[in-house]
Image (cartoon, one colour):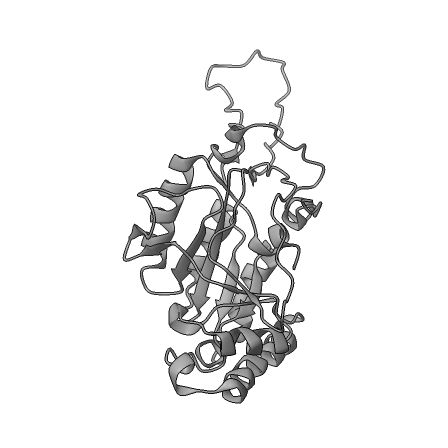
Amino acid sequence: MPSSVPSRRAALGLLGASVVAGLTACTPAAGAESSTADPTPSDAAAPTASPSVTPTPSPTPTATKRIRRTFIPDFQLPPIVGGLASVITKIPTKHPVVFLTIDDGNIKTPESVKLMAEYDYPASLFLTKDTIADNPAFFNAFKAQGSLVENHTVTHNINMVRQWGYQQQLNDMMGMQEYALQQYGRRPTLFRPPGGAYSTVMRQAVADAGMKAIITWEAKANAGKMDYQVGNSLRPGDIVLMHFRAEFAADLAAFRAAQLAAGLEVVLLEDFLGVA
């Protein structure tokens, strides 16, 4: 049976907005502004005895958000079985949704905050303690926009599957669990392995660290273009990988073009999985 988890993003992002019942919800440009031109007084001579009237100023234009659709998830996250967390590479769904995930946290620029707000994208932020410890508060801006912080370890050892046993892996995960709770008020529920490699030992450590699933990907925005492991366009249920890198703007633009071309709505993965 599909889970009936309402979209937390819909409740947070819209005050009194109606749900749009069509794919056109993701077509209008995010952050568009509506404005009314100020009335311009005429230079023609006014009648002699006419008093001057001060024009009423127009209201300041305000940014308008896209109206998000509400999707009732048609996929249920598998439970922990045999002490092992599940591995999710793509969400099998008939809904026109796509999930944006952003890793590491190395490069922190105001531009990335501005673009995510302008496009009104929620994302799962798989952050690494060692790369964000210089400025953890930077990511509060994304959290305020509706994104969530998830676990990408303390050290980002891309060889942890080969080099470390169960206890070392668990320690690295638990260190990030506690750091995320301290900095952002929530323990992560999802884990992304550095480099993407995982094992049965890692699946056990993830479950024992209190997380629900390992999240990988089949599509990524990289070096200003989209790379696909399957096909040549985004598909419903795709989990897209990005990074906080110098080319953030170009990568996000590539993702946006692919997302709009595919007619997909960007939905928070945690909302869809019911682990927000």
